[in-house]
Amino acid sequence: MMMNKIPEINRARGYFVYTSDGKRYLDMALEGGRLIMGHRQKGYALALKNVIDKGILPGYPSPYAYRLKQAVKALLGKECFVYLFKSEERAREVLGSDPINDPIILILPVPSDFAPGVVVSATELDLADEPVSPVILAGAVRAVYNLKAFLAERDYSEWEGLARACAETPDANTGKWKIDLPYIYPMCEPDDYPAVWDAFFEAGVILSTDYDTPSLLPPSGELSEGNRKKVLELLKK
Image (cartoon, rainbow, N blue to C red; front, side, top):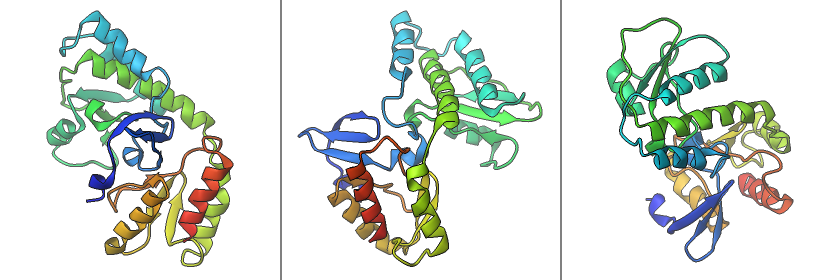
């Protein structure tokens, strides 16, 4: 498996992860987009620590449930009904399907192990919130407000030329990638993807280990010119 080829990671920052022996990799897997803002997003760890320091770890009623609902409404820019569950898996179990339009399960910009299930609906549903640890909720609140600011400021202009080239000539000098900024999707055969993944990994870039899950290009300005050129060269092979 491709995941087994990744060495032990002992720290991460921005769009890079670092191994125990000091080797740096550009992380374009970013957990399928959950880490679209990169590793160690501003204020997230502090939000967790503040609640841990208060000692309220179990899922007792807390103000963080209300705060998360308000953050979701601010992110979406509309009034809606928001229901909270212990996990996304639990939310899907309660809904009985994987909804696409309404209601939806909102994927939060946090690692999956730290993500409560958030169901959003335009109409009131016969659902009740589940108790969720205030630690998890506080981190989610910070992450949602971070995402709101990120979406307003994000800049992927450095990649627009590549995206246009892939759209116009997907089979010529683009490595058969489909690009919907910031997401990139492999257009090779699934059986060929491990070899593509290996080529990137050998060059110090980690792609998604799942063919069906897109990788992501970091925002403009997050990479040096040398790193951008390296990614461009890899995508064109």
